[in-house]
Length: 315
Picture 1 (cartoon, rainbow, N blue to C red):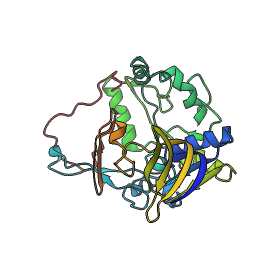
Picture 2: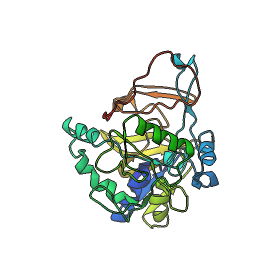
Picture 3: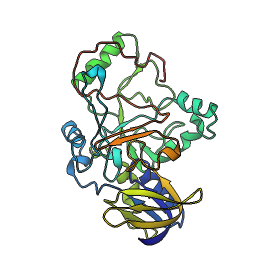
Picture 4: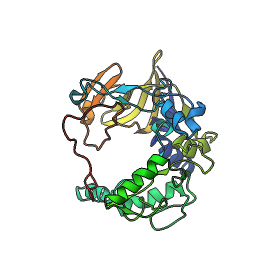
């Protein structure tokens, strides 16, 4: 096994990995290696913002891990696709570009549960630093950052009908430029903001954070490389291996695992990290204390009512 030294190895050039790499490379002299299982974001559809282009990415095996759920009893045994990006920018290169920070009460609840530094007011400066919001800077929003965020500028007729229906049901409507990522969002109907430019190009984390550092002397990007093992010295992570065919090792002072929880390539290390894992080809199941979304991609008859967010609820 050959080895090469870096100060920091980041596993996964996805939504978070690109941001971490950008901050380290720009703000320090650390030698940073970013390893990505996928390749460059060169497909034209990635950078387009029309609906057909976006939807086409969810079934593209060259940039999507192609995970599916277990058979769902309430869907007559059918499985649901779970699109996860395998490309520069990760899921931010294949998602629907909807920008939502989440409800402030969730962050405050994390802080109250003992997660120091995770209250809404404590994380707000990082949200502001990251973005370049079309509506300009305010207490809640940032301007001049790498990530372009714009108002939803072309609502479809269906969106307009849904907006009107919400008003009929008694929800507040404050116009197409109501900022739900600012002070409040409950009991309101709003159009989503989007991570794209005004000339209609996707702003993935690859575009916003990775592109500006690709030519930096203290940065190395390794594509099409699946990390198979984290190397430890006692309780400290000191390197990684990737392969096949020939295992290659990288030694590092620090290891950052930036993969999202459904995107870790090999299940072996996860039980030691407190996760239950069951993985078969094309499917993965992990047990984490995380919120997640349910994506119903096929029509059908609902036998029972499914609980959804109540008015005024952050869950």
